[in-house]
Image (cartoon, rainbow, N blue to C red; front, side):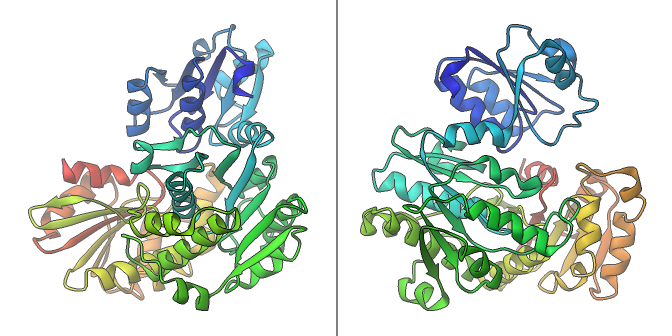
Length: 433
């Protein structure tokens, strides 16, 4: 697909997924340009790779000689000047998953799907297959040290390991040979009508797997079991007994990460990879960026960055960290992700931070939110709700005030946890610096 074009432009090139295709296009010797709304570690890395990146969206960024425009779903297609200009010029346009879908047509594609843990399992499976000499292409939503701190491993075999996304049924653009289903718990309720609608999207995806394909699924999750029944190929369940028997312990904490390694191991085994090589690699796995990522230690303070934003993820992450760092106070800066999502989960959030000694909430990260939705909830109201269950929660209003509060409260021997799927990671990076 990539080789059919000489110049590809990316709108929102700094996205955690879309940037991977930019790297791929660059590796094929194509002209690659892109834009994003703000500087980030990703845009800086893209520039270092020789890719032209402009900060700020404007129609002048679209060269009429561009043959393909790939855009992130995060933009507003009604107002984005580059999107509108590309449309006016008649340039072919694909969203991120449509582009990934075209790639998947020509590969044996294994798609990792689920509500929680997709990025970690994709990284685990990808690195394991690299170690087992399968030379897969791997694309996921976070940087991995084993992939030169990129979100892509450019392999040259028939195998393609990719992280799927259920938002707006995006994963239906992919052409799966196999699937890895970790969990299925209602999410993105700003898009889906209800839990049944959410589950039906997974069923529709699994029905695309061919008879000679397979699904590896979590037998402990009822919805995953229900979805797996619609696969025409092999069905391989992973349960607690199997996790215990395999007992593969990665270098990152948490019982759920042992479950993740068991799922990754079973998937690699299913396609015939050397079990010893796979197990050895999984036992040395140190995680992906922002998945309980230890940023470093400053003046005796351990700083960890994590992507968790859903109550299930928050509880599991905090439980694992409390077990691993039982002698430390946990100071958590949590940034809720999306106003619409926060409205859906806000009743579960007050019970999610039991392991935290001090909780700071600066703001809610807006993405695809309407003004009507924003009027229904804000960070201050959320803090008031959580304070009914948690004795030590503070609304810190913005990043600057949050940072000052961190400097006041955090002491040597503490664990500073920066948590959320938005731009809150910037606080952790600033503290380290």
